[in-house]
Length: 207
View 1 (cartoon, rainbow, N blue to C red):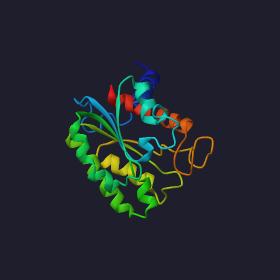
View 2: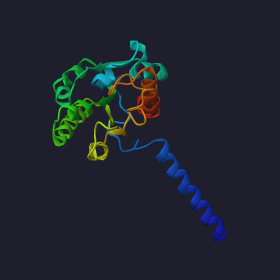
View 3: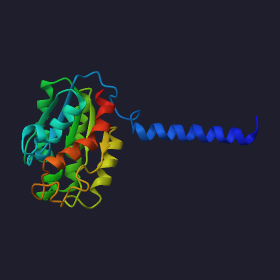
View 4: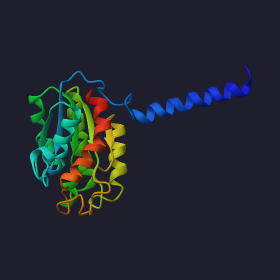
């Protein structure tokens, strides 16, 4: 066979493989995927609870639930730090978790909690979720709340713990009055954008 066509064939194969990786980011590296659990859960702080939304069905968890066509358990508690999250892990024992989204760390920064402690608490939360046989999905929060390479450290934590990861769900929303009700919490439009960002990744692990 002509070397030219061999080279073209190899190039097409490489592009195809890269395409699969881009469409299904880290699916082969995420612990417990596919999970035999049944419940999709959102675990976190006021962003998960939906503070700032005009109605419960307008928070990003409810919007995601509608997009997926299945219920999502909302375990968001306003004001929670990662340490609070560790203390609440027993709440997961009421369910048969398949996927647990974790959105915590913003309040740690606001209260001046050392970044190392935040990361250690998140590691504990991820480990607990995975020990329940579920896929852990770590949702990043950066914006102007969390600097000092926080996003990169969250990504590294997710990779080391074999958790799925989505960076900075507030990207482009933080500080924009079109999408925020106050300095920290999105409005309905902002929560809709967060849901749209999470949906492709969540669908991969929740189906």
